[in-house]
Length: 425
Image 1: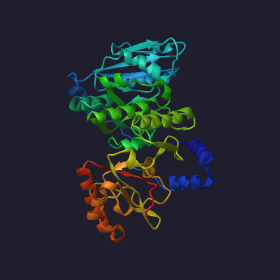
Image 2 (image 1 turned 30 degrees about the horizontal axis):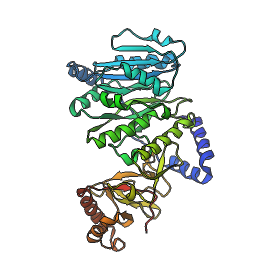
Image 3 (image 1 turned 120 degrees about the vertical axis):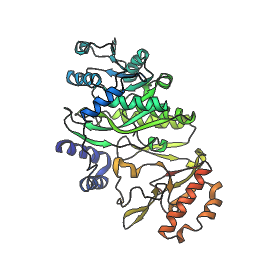
Image 4 (image 1 turned 90 degrees about the vertical axis):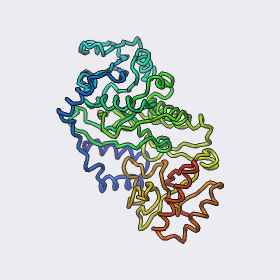
């Protein structure tokens, strides 16, 4: 991202959030190098050749849907090129073009796997994509924006995951790229499916591939245009959870999200309606679960915070406890932990939000710190038995008792949710 773009981004943030929050956000940006180790490296040619050899035997067919609208020729040619150079060959590309002149069809290289559908009118991204979906014949359905590209080994890894796990859906890591696809930045290293984190932001995003029966059952809904993929992912996640089906995260960057002045990838105000519809998608999902929730925007567009009434326990019987951060000398010293007690967001200063703002977001966690925890009434006896008085615990004892208590909770079928706004009592 260039200097001018960063300045414009800061101005927009200031306009929304005021001086104090902007000062903290700028300080965090200046003094924190996000992904300093990240440098995208394309898969070596020898490995790509090996993938082609291995992929010679037919696996699941993958349909990639592209809703096109007034697409720049350069972007479209690069999209077609990334598909034709895939190391996995059992795919089809279904392009639903709502452009006025339909000139894109003149740019398509003849290949029986590429199907072009000229639409008579532009009915929005959801309806246009659903038209492509009607023509899809694959076992799995992937969604590709008309200005983005896949890595050359993308479908190889998707097919591999599909064949092995038959999951309800698959998603990969991604990064952003400049308009010419020369520079890659802001790697999005994702977590496994975490519904509470997903309710705060669409961290799954690209590359999203759903099993065909799931996609054709759910479809995209036009009332959420701009955040239609977020709405789809929420519903697909609920489907997978309710039906005890696999969801596979591929921890590899397989998708390049192109950035330019009109793209939401770099200018979050360019399509403000998309974030409004994202909020609506979360609100409607909560209503579908009969949760009494107010969804509020955070200072960062596209990120939300859920307030449960009267509390989370009354709405969600699976939640056994919520845990918040512990601060020491102005930095995080306790709170969200891994199963072994390793601290997430260690030493992050107060007010900082961390990598992809995750330290400021609600999320399911393996272990929560008992020194700043609320438990549902039914578990208070277990808490007293295992923990005792948390105010009397040393830091080391607190970690061990947190591990033990949360393990016992999980064995009983409960989960722990991290609530970054919870104040230590």
